[in-house]
Length: 610
Image (cartoon, rainbow, N blue to C red; front, side, top):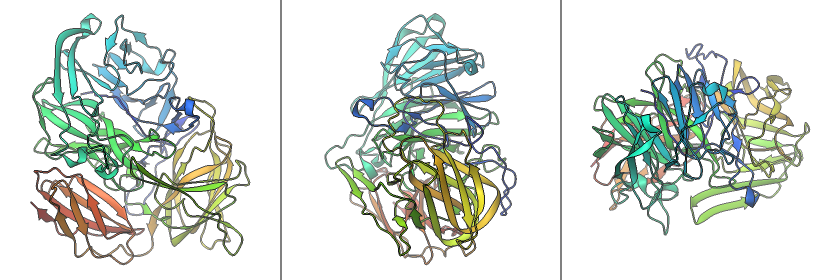
């Protein structure tokens, strides 16, 4: 069944010219041979946004992906991108600039593959307009249906096997998702069938509560939006996003029905796509697409929210239906390298490469500014400009490039080949890949702009004196704001050096320089003393455990059964955690593991909490 969607944010990439992704096969000494990998946020050439241009806010964004398979290939439509992307493998993406499109870019779009004959598309930012169609999306030529449809922003167009056509829509903290039937054979005119479907129930579902970490001091009602429909084994899975695109807990849930019109029943393992912890957070307002081999993938929006709340990126996670018909996505270690869709048994799973650069000592060529930024809720965004610090060698220090926070950033004094970054990693390791998360600092770009490029090289060293080139993009034309680069051959190193040539904007700026591979030491010991206290408000739970020597962090897993630990929350540098995302009336099972640059410990004994 071919599916698609609509609404809000994130990314892929790497390749040649304007193609992105990780093209080359790679060799992993742990036995992972000749399989592509990818890393969230996705590495694509995100578009600069127009809708905050009146405030002179210049930043890229990618949100609300609508992804479809059409004739064995894939197309991805993204909010306000002034076009869309094409891929043959779900890893490498090439931008297509259509011949006719919306002047402001589509908003929260929807797309549908009708029996491999036509692609239908809607996403007029005005919220009404014609549904477009084409039999050749590669050409960029689209034809409008000769009628005007309403409610086509933040909507989902779904055509069932019997040709009956449905439009789902809604984006509100008050009003429910709705559906109406259209006549596909008569210009998509409304048939008169219209129905209210589902709404948020925050008093029961903790993950639907508004705010960062599902907390806000005044606003309690989350936003329900991003409707999406997947048909699987005769069941209809109505997916929706909550509680807000700018938050780490932005997620997708699902209701299950026997018909496209419902009634729909809340899925007891919700949310089905959830990534609240780690480096880049959020996995909401997405779409579930079926690969040609039958594997499902959920594309969704991640919150970057550094320059603006609507600054977002894209992610992709493997999605499954278990023996009870429950839909879930695998998001653990969701921003570490993952096997690509070509892997026969582990597609989309974490491939075992760990983070070598965390808390590495960083020196830089110059510093115009360094910003630390943390979001606790809408009313409390903590922003600190760090003072200029130098080491004994008079090198400028940076504390924001290896902190696993995408909102923090460093800005160089210029954008030229005199700018550089050097990381002394805490321990040496075997490097397999890099992820460069560039920052947009007052770039002055407010729309889709061709010809942008990131030119640089990366060198590595074991002793900080003798260097060898690991990556050479000094003459590249690749535009890769979240570049993910896998080495042809892994290299042993303790030091990594980025040498700038040019990037978009007046100043070279970066938020995070991530180095992936495997350390030479031992994986951490198993976690002991794991304790869970479910609060009086049963949507909340507090966790404590004994620190593990040598651990970078911990990953808490939970679910509705011992064999259904579908949720996870990755944390760094703490031995306690508090979450507000549980369903009030659901008992849960919990486990925890420790991780470091060498690998992941065994999971702790599963604990049942009624």
